[in-house]
Length: 358
Ligand code: F0G
Image (cartoon, rainbow, N blue to C red; front, side):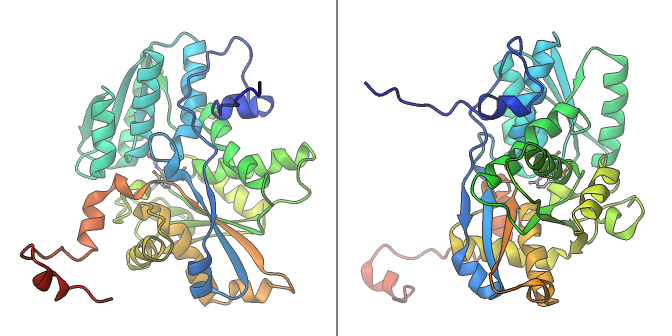
């Protein structure tokens, strides 16, 4: 009889590349192995010089890429005997930490910037039983205080300054390379952990002889929260893409290294460009991501407008992968705000057909 192979999550899949041993209790929700989807409709609208792919990280168990890092951070915290974890978050990290900590039988404390968390993310932290505290300040303030608490009390920090988070997140690069090595890798940048992780993943896969070259890294911040682009921390970061509303990224230096080593760039996109890309990907491909994720698409559209790709294209189309970091369902309020409200019609054929064009 054939044995049915069940996917067991990214630690079991990529064990060789991760700092785990037989002693590590693997806390997994079968994260990773997310779809890499060719965006045919969108690529036709953007540029004749590119093949556009999206890595749909919203398909992770808690709906964002954070699960990749969290399976590692929580498994290692458990291995080290920790009983509780803490994080600051713009929402997705807290949702993921709450889920994985619960599964591990650990306490979870999350500190959020008051009033700036998308509704779906907040419901996740609450439903998974975390202690949820809002602070009167932004993500950067929350991260500072969380660092202080974890230095003084027996509670493990699971923000991306925890190196195990980066280890888990780098597996996204491995999954992409199992298909092909992109020419360009486009990614939203907030606290800058994910761009750091992907670049580490690509470099390690190359060092292991699994690929021959690495992609050019293209990072995108929101215009009102673009410290790396501007070259200084932003005291009061603003953007409707609340996930990346960050003024002083923890992995700033590493993000710059990824940019420079790969001969890439970190640029910014406006909230209007983000919303346009957010609607476009949902409305042309059937792929629903949250606003921050659409910064990667918005960035590719912006660069294409500047002939960035056409200047670099040869006889073959360039392969561009955009990381769609979180699911659209995370932020229902934003979706409602950018959409037409459905009209109410009497339930009869004639009335309904007045509003349906075929
Ligand atoms: N996209 C989404 C959906 C995010 O939630 C985040 C970060 C990013 C992009 C940026 O990734 O920080 O590694 O550069 N969210 C963090 C959080 C800050 O608390 O959930 P990054």
